[in-house]
Image 1 (spheres, rainbow, N blue to C red):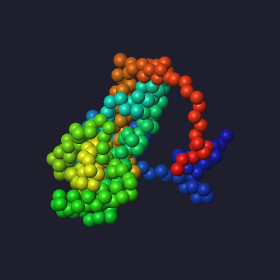
Image 2: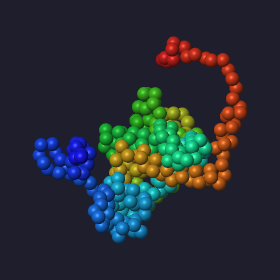
Image 3: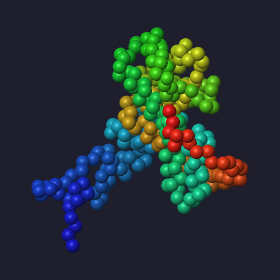
Image 4: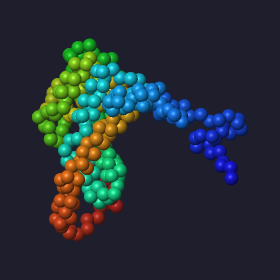
Length: 287
């Protein structure tokens, strides 16, 4: 029985009516009977044992080989975001594994799905926010200029009653130790660009507007650093998830040795308290 040609189905299908084999060009992985190429390189000879994973991840995303300085900054970001303790992403990964130990992929996926506006997603939110400001204003040439731009930016956000992505942390209230270190690494590699400059200025001037001092958090500085590397803004959260995948594997490995998920489950299950139903007013509509 002949197989129908399905548009978009891949090999051996034809462009309707032309008789021309359909092609799917890619600069990423491609195989023949004897070779595998990746990014134009021979995978076995030029990539395996030659490139670190961070360098390869950067190259895959940009389709250009990073410089040693870019690799150092990029891998510093991955290290900063890999694990940050018993965050919701770590807890849900452990609990999912407790519920379905036959599905490691499910446990990892559960943790990654929790990467949103409060955890991990701040990396993307901060990078986009800084980029939006920089698209509308010429880059200053000195700290005074950056401070003036940052002051206008913070005032505008305050007037709009909006938070500034990357400002504040629920644990590191007196300063996130990842932030000055990433600033330092970027400066050492000559990659301290406009996104980091604006973020640092926001850290200096925001108390004048908010009346209190908040830390620049690690997720935010990572977003600024990734944006300064020229990485696609649409993928900034993806790099945070790439980093956190390694951390979640570590969480699962530790759960195998020193399980806590059962205690977390039972602490809730055995201490629940029954209360009468409380229906939402107005059918659950708010505002």
